[in-house]
Length: 179
Ligand SMILES: [Zn+2]
Image (tube, rainbow, N blue to C red; front, side, top):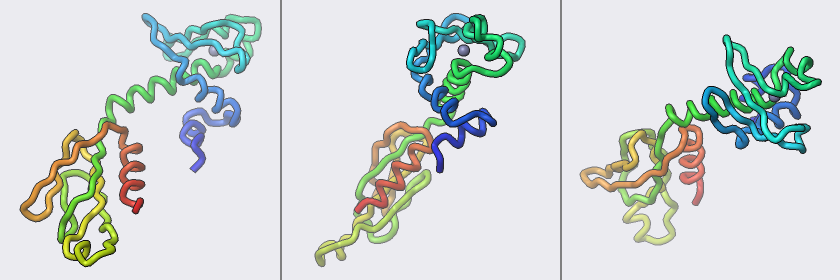
């Protein structure tokens, strides 16, 4: 999938270079009292060291709208405002989407079980001992930092790392697919 696709849905009708400029500014956003500050970048065509962005009456404003080319920009939305919109949605996603992904190799005769979304693949054995004691590559996506993986009566704890759900899914799939 095109990594710019989610942005395209958020800002329809914008060119690829516009979306890339908005994305490039994401790390330049900071919060002031009642407004946001977006650091200016000469390579993106900025003439000032910083721009202020604020919301008023349901409409976004940017200090770049006050410059000589601002009237043209004000009719639409500038990439400073777009960066602030992205910053806010990322912040919200971080707060809401707190997941953990735990990975490890677990010895088990049958497929291990865990609370949460489990990915498990048998490790291909090379010796008779491997066949006698089958191992599984296990990845679990959970809302808890420590995940209990059950193999029959036995329980093994795996410690997870924090991630968004999307990140956790990628980590889990890649871990289990590796051999
Ligand atoms: Zn602007």
